[in-house]
Image (tube, rainbow, N blue to C red; front, side, top):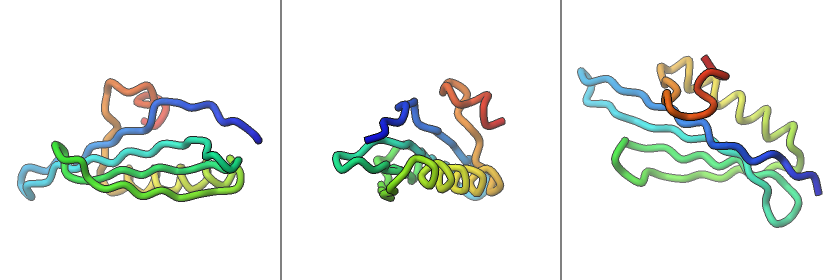
Length: 92
């Protein structure tokens, strides 16, 4: 089983006061118990628990590709990285 390096998740916020919008989106990769990789997505209104969706992958490369696609999609929609997270500078 290949272990991936577990890092702090990517945390994004999108705020628009004219639309009363305050959303968060969190992406994280983790190892599962069966030797695969899980992409964990959490999202919702800031201040709530939100929802969680897990996607399972057989290898790290396909999980990373899916994470990158979701991250780029959210950045194009106006989500911004939270400044105090370790990945802040790597996705600007």
